[in-house]
Image (cartoon, rainbow, N blue to C red; front, side, top):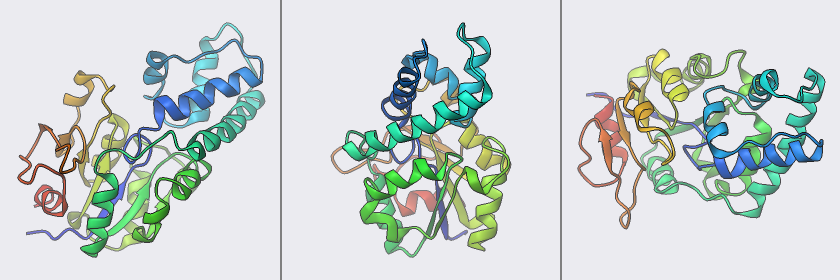
Amino acid sequence: MNILKAVFWDVDGTIADTELEGHRIAFNRSFHDYDLDWRWDQLTYQNLLKISGGLNRIKFYNKSAKEKITDDMCKKVQIRKGLHYKNIIRSGVIRPREGVLRLINELHCQNVEQYIVTTSGRASLEPLLKTILEKSIKCFSGSITCEDVVSLKPHPEAYLKVISYCHFPIENCIAIEDSLNGVASAKAANIKCLMTPPAWLDKDDITSTTANACVDSLGSLTNPSNLIYGIPIMNKIVDFNYLTSLIV
């Protein structure tokens, strides 16, 4: 039986549902600041999430926009967006997803190493570390962000890098992800993966993933986790024992 030694946490959508009411809103505010006639509604942004990296999303959208901008302007819009995102996170409107803080603390008590593995920028991560994760920073041994890799998810580079940092065999590790790109990234690195998709993710996209299990949330005593597919949850929440069962 494999013993759980390390857990790799994705951030956006996994630790907190930051995408639609965090990043998307920040993008739209940045567009407004630069007098761009762009507005990303929820459906537009959900489709853009198939592309990793905020700057890449801006450049992709720019190709089909009626009002096109230069690459330099794309970068300025992305930088401005980062400032708006920090303010949104600091306002406290974004909360951790169900069961996240509970599981982080439980794993810490079980001496499981935990790492953040995101291909978002460090500037996006730091506001979360200072708010949602402020009391849990001690539980993490390190982090990988887009500044640490050349290729973004779904490429496995971020996970291959964190494996080299933690020094544990892949068989003793598991990733927690919310998206198709994230699951694909972990699986391409041969790491077992639990998927916790946001409520707005298309059901067909969820069932098409190759995660080892999929749940609607990590769960709590008052709001249990519901299994979408995979090994049944015995204690109604995702805990150390359940994650261990996924790496056997």
